[in-house]
Image 1: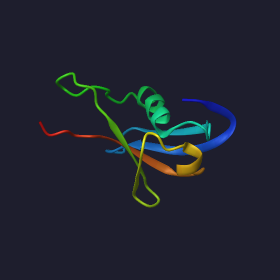
Image 2: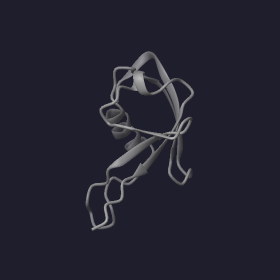
Image 3: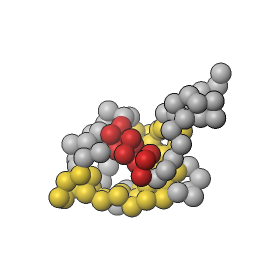
Amino acid sequence: MRFADSGISLQVSDVSSQKMANVRDISEDSTVGELVRGLLAEMNLPQNDVEGRPLTYGVRRQRDGQYLHGSDRVGEALMTGDWIMLQPSIDAG
């Protein structure tokens, strides 16, 4: 995740809202995918399921319920004060 001297500030939670973070100065040029990778470690969220397979996380922008793509640019998809929720994608197998 790239940080800038001035950038976007967000509130972030996991799907249960038990883990939350306030993140500041996110570079507007970063992708949502880069943001998520940085947040997983910062928020100590699991990166693998119980069988050891990598988890993929989706991002939901709470102000309008829209799901964001990993390739979306932070500066185009988010604005300061937004709250996003990280939720693991469940693949039925």
